[in-house]
Image (cartoon, rainbow, N blue to C red; front, side, top):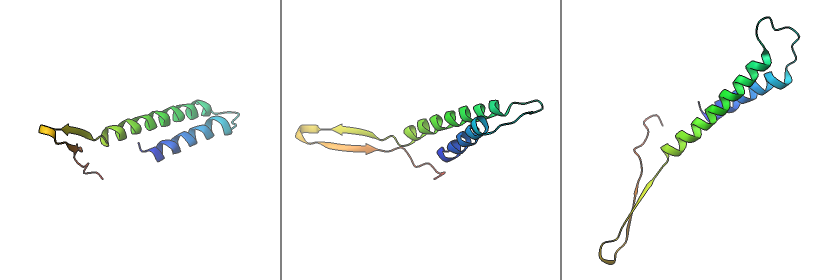
Length: 82
């Protein structure tokens, strides 16, 4: 789930939980569904941040033989989805 989709799910859940007033729901509770959507959206945002931090990591290697300094940036391979 992308960040935009997660924010949309949180917004829909907040609307269902806080802004909708229903007298009879016939078997399910609108406010509980809103709370569940907000939790799912928060989990989606946390998961996306974890995947972004892993995907954009760069390893830096410092080597200095006999008075010289060389820095190598080893980036992970490009993701074919992007």
